Image (cartoon, rainbow, N blue to C red; front, side, top):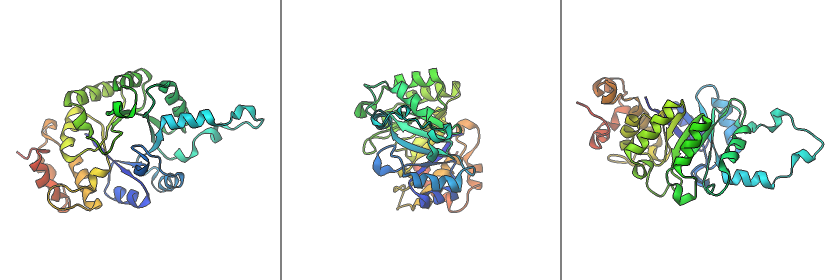
Length: 282
């Protein structure tokens, strides 16, 4: 069953998403790009409240910028003071199960070695997420086929397929059903967590579930207008979570049983889902 990840930017949004019982909390700053890193104090505060209660993930920006910072930093080995392993780890990641970093502008650098170096800086309990931009051509990211091969060869813990340009088409408009299904199957076969993101809409969820993705990641989609009228962030979150709880026909469970398990507030999305053929109520 595909689970729901919701990206939040601060404590208020984290509290709302947690109250709506999403499966994963992801922290990022959307004004800084597709994978903009939230301030350290925000990450620490959310981790102190929710670590151990729900799986946490966070964005770390772009690998190109991280690598540039590493190359311009003073060589710590030239100093007489040695850093302990605890000090050299990125302590702002403590409490996070996952950390992800983008590969925009990395096509012409040795991104494979750089990504492994970045992963090595994470705390032991924080797993690195490899990010593939579906619109790689637009942001000079490595080709998707190269990323998939690297993921399978190195057995990365998780891979997210996302879009860099949030003003462009969404993932399910860029990639075909066949391409999504092929990736999900290969990742599942290798035991790699598969995450789909990138301007996902309600009508995309059936596709992602049929393709076999482990996680659907959203942010803007939960707050936008759907069906008739505007949805508040809380209602949007409830609708998305309710959608993820549905057992679609291919899983052998009728929608009627799922409807009975939903609250009155959560049932408000049903007419919209039927209008876009996201569910089969027969």
